[in-house]
Length: 403
Image (cartoon, one colour):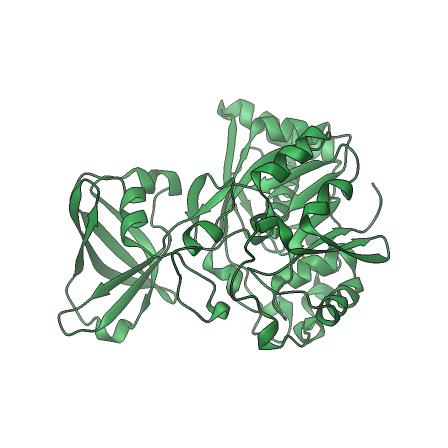
């Protein structure tokens, strides 16, 4: 199966996306976006505020509560050159620990206009309510197409406060514009909590506090995972086959109470966004691997699901819970490189709320694994009926089988 999967041609997951169909800005009201619904074989059109009437009764809705950081740091050299330092992930430190630092920390970063940064450190002054602080960046060695950058700053603030004040929200490059003041709130879910992402889990952008309350009041249960979205989420597949494409690694955090709930789940599980899908499905495969390698760290590889044996949901998640017991921990922290592509069989997730994705993307492969070739019909319908595409665009609800 794996060899056949790796031969899948990415050109078979292409579609025409006119530039004018990419939503450059969000709608004035989050939940007024269009919502395409595919239940079984039937496509219908709604608004996102109709979601409560469309979910199966007693569904469990799982959100990704990561928070987008102001990852773009812009430094001006004395020569006038502008250098952009784009923070991707901490170097040799957990995300939460890096944001708590109050003097210095190191990050793996993309560097824009790198040729103009020949030597020495970059520095700049920024103003906050308590006064001014100086942030300095010093480049170390390259890591792939990125660099290790050492940051130090004055003022005694946490790095979370520093980057919030000095940085710019990192909009997706396909929006073709610079971030504006409103993007600081609109390119962020209303339930964003844990700093760490350089891109929003965009399916969640449609939710409002009132809509979440309405869902809960009608018996829809809600819970959260954390996956810190990396810049690789924007990377289209540039190889001819998916077997030649290397998935990016992303950091995940899952609480014990949710794992216990999932082990005994007797209701439909609907993931909000592809990041929630990858987190939940990675949790299952980690449980499978623990059966063979007890107490191994949570590191789910790109092709693990296609080579590991199957276990029941109860067995796999039971392995994870026993691992947490042995570690005396209530939280599972790890990373995933999981690729979900046609041929994959979902183990935990029944339905998906998501946006419309780029042509030839791994996110489109994930959707196709859930609904098969019906993705073509859905995207054709959306293009024919004025739907808006990508991060600030409209949404879909896919429920291939009635759970």
